[in-house]
Amino acid sequence: MLNQILEVVLEFLPIYAICYGVNVFLYFATGWVLVQIQNRHPDRRIQPKRRGEKRMWKEIRQSVYSLTVTAGCLAGGVFLSLKGWTLVDPLELSWWSVILMFVVSVFAFDTWFYWGHRLMHTKWLYRFHAEHHKSVAPTVWSTYSDDLLDAFVMQSYYLFAVIFLPIPAVVLVAHRLWDHFNGTIGHSGFEFYASPLSRIPSPMVCVTFHDQHHSKFRYNYANFFSFWDRVCGTIAPNYDAEVKRFEAMGAESKDQAVQPGE
Image 1 (cartoon, rainbow, N blue to C red):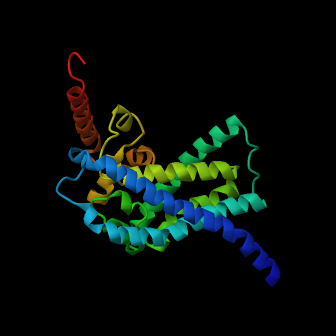
Image 2: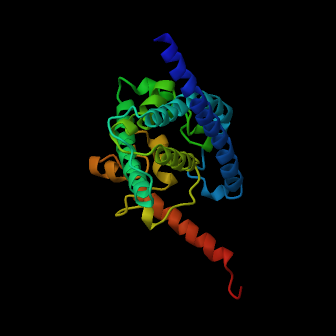
Image 3: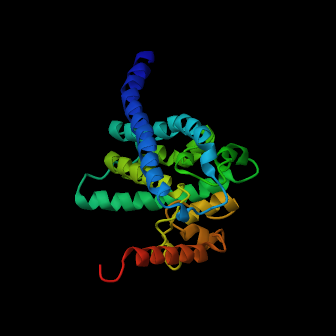
């Protein structure tokens, strides 16, 4: 029995090491690229009177720490799928199954994230979520600045989803990559993505959506979409107006960049 457990652990560890290494690499690489872009456009800062960068090194230390949990959840989901230790078999890979399960997974995760996030804001569990909210003005470095329990509640979707949904391991990894870029951009604190697609009646969101969650605390709990927040009445009252404001700013920038006769 002990030998069997040891064999399972030794099989799992390389997958975990790869997941953690890739997560940490992408954390720093994505953050660095976004900071270079942001430095050229200070006017796009969502909270101009706050400088979240002052917490950068604290956020980096906490993120590298909490990514041990995030990587563990993803590695665990991939491992369960590869071993066949699930209630349903993953769909065979094809162009339609990849697209279908990616879309299903994104919608399922958004629901998981919304209700898990609401749970972490209750008086019983908020102390485990408070670390993340020390970043009142979020930055690219605050994306994973979480308590370990908080990280598990949010990211354990990747561990459990394969048990109940026929998600191929490669699709789960693709979803996690998408979630990484979405989360890092969503915490960046700079708005470059405001458009009619990120306000009513569209369910899509832009950076302002999650930034308002950090600055207002009681609004905008979801991840990819605004659907659950609109249905449950937790959308920030001025979210759509702020999106329009940044839309106008973007239009002005384009007009200035394109001069007559060019």
